[in-house]
Image 1 (cartoon, rainbow, N blue to C red):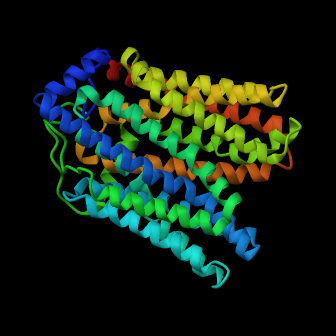
Image 2 (cartoon, helix red, strand yellow; image 1 turned 120 degrees about the horizontal axis):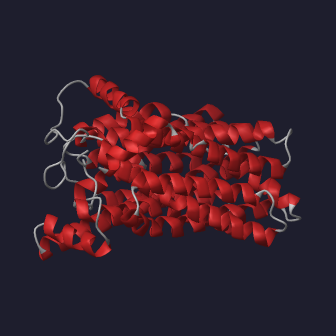
Image 3 (cartoon, one colour; image 1 turned 180 degrees about the vertical axis):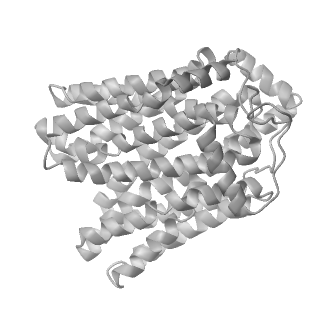
Length: 439
């Protein structure tokens, strides 16, 4: 199978740099390409930081102003759930757009405006207004996930994609690590209102950065389709037809399908962790708030794993890395259930995060090798939306199970579920697809 935007299968880090320079036409142009990719990743990280901070900041402020946890949950649901519907549409639209910047800027503006609105109006207006603002903030959220990731192969030559994918994956971990911590510090020091206002300010900073990053309409060089049958051109037609075509691609390409199912199932089970880890902290004779430190250890380990994923992918195929990382993450999460104390639990959580870190980079590499260039943004946005929805569903399931299972049983369930998520990747058709990927 010819790569769409992926790397050559057999080269190392030094060859990556040489290929990047060669593909971009020499030293000066390569330097410009790398600077452009760096600016894009900085913009993506700041924008994702605002997104990752928003959910917890919204909950804290709505509860503080209205004393209504149910309303807080509805506002956050309005912020997250619509991505299940908007992801495929926004991704298909991005694939067709030549001038993409306006959509990225609109997302940052609407997020900043909606969060500012909640910060000003919470406690003074009916709850339905806050829910509507949450909906406004989340409607275009797939731009922050699949949208930014779809721009990476437009800026980075094939030889440099492994490192770029690792940095893109690390961007999520940086946002997931710093976002809740920032909100907790600001809310504790100056109140939830200031915390949410600061998140709105970060989103506005993301808008400024988005206006300055390069956003090419097409990838450098010639890109080939999933079957390697020549360069892929944008397919004219209605947005509805493009959405349907992209969804069929997710269904019909075996390796892409198994990867999407496996990573979505993994996120479903990991969605139990924000509810489960505070309960585990209590079981380990610590306050429930110490569960945040376990989440921080997971995110910190994830950042380290994501940064190391470039080297892993230089030595092993992306499907092999995905399978090994998912299995290791499940094993460490299962081991976390047996942690004898809080200190060991922190160490095991960090190891689970480090194992989870390469999963996204491997997933990006698989997409870049199996998805035609004119459907890449839609595929990335759709898959990201599915995982976001699965994570939210997992959090809801955790609340239902918390009364029936102990904290250790819940964590063990998460680990076993992560291992079960391997099933689509280990099936006969998945193995055939992996061979095709290697070839």
